[in-house]
Amino acid sequence: MPEQNSNKPLVNTLLVIALVIAAGAIGHLWTKAQYLEGQANNVAGAQVGNTPDTAPTPPPFNADNLEPLSDSDLIRGNKDAKIVLFEYSDLECPFCSRFHPTAQQALDEYGSEIAWVYRHFPLAQIHPKAQKFAEVVECTKNLNGNDLAWQIIDAIFEDQTVTVDQATDMAIDLGVNSGALNSCLDGDETADYIAAQLSAGEAAGITGTPGTIILNTETGQAELISGAQPFNQIKQTIDSLK
Image (tube, rainbow, N blue to C red):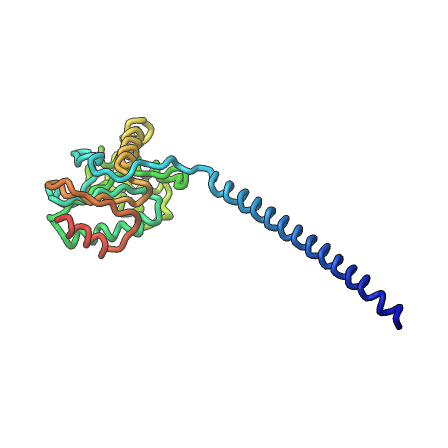
């Protein structure tokens, strides 16, 4: 019995040493796991930050950079109205399609108090039909006038499955001369005009579609409405600027 008791200190010492070694090993493994997790997060963050096709950050909204209303604009309502809605839009954009009846509702409610201007902002990198749609609309406007061009806009937004060929046929069915239309579509002038509208929108601070700048032409005060906002927000903004 005395021999057994004499072994207890040695056993206890060995047990303590084993526990210390185990604790150290666990601590090392935990530290390594934390390090690896951090490295994984860094890689994931870098991948998110380097997403391709990210456009440069545009300048902030600046009403002073807004192109004033001109005779070449597509306009509905009273062109001499104090309040003008400048909508920068993409004819293949589903949110623009959703916003279209909202803008029409504003025009119906305010009548001659406002004007609604449609400007092209085709996001060709994600909407491959948008540029050609815009060209069909502009060529229709140049050949047969503002009202017929708006009919094309209405029809495309009403049915987002329309193809470019169908939009072209639609313009011809509405009375646009097919030869003149195709000649217009084949030229560079209309495409250059649309590109200029897009650049002007970017200069004013438009970052996506729809982007609607509501302007009081008498005071110069303006607000930018981004996205397909509900009518109540459009109404509130118009009333605040009147």
